[in-house]
Length: 200
Ligand code: VGL
Ligand code: ZN
Image 1 (cartoon, rainbow, N blue to C red):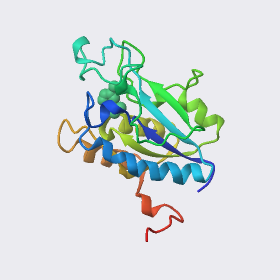
Image 2 (image 1 turned 90 degrees about the vertical axis):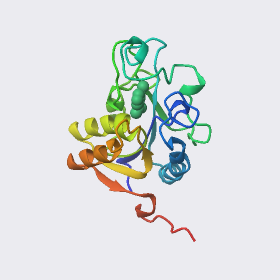
Image 3 (image 1 turned 120 degrees about the vertical axis):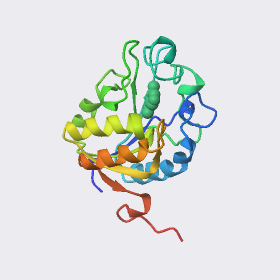
């Protein structure tokens, strides 16, 4: 692994997990797996990014205002917080998306850090060339973020053991993975990482 490679943990927030307003089936199961990836990347001094869905109370993203979804990940609420077991290292960077009352914004390439910098700018400044992506949901934020990354010239590796989808249609996640791979994404699972210590 090298400094051009970074981990992106997508939207592992309470509302997408058990008891959340838009619970992804088995969403919370990605947490322990992602914690291993987080240790692996931060242990080698590599960048770790976290994105979050960060909506205003009223947005066209929500059913009540013409959108597809029940209200979720409203700014400053429990549902918008990261899952309590997710290990978010102090030195990691959080980017937020979905703040516009007018549009959906599923992609992390529509996200901004606390200083208002675009996610793509942050990646460029750090010389990141390849993203290892896991989180929620495979068929929305993960998919849109990955397709944008590929289109904009980043390499992408999908952490297939650390993502779960909404599956409005039962095979949405499977089809999303196929689409991302057909556009150039690679796939990996934790034990296939370079020099990953085999579990005894
Ligand atoms: C997402 C549905 C609605 C996601 C966000 O982050 O995948 N999905 N808003
Ligand atoms: Zn949302």
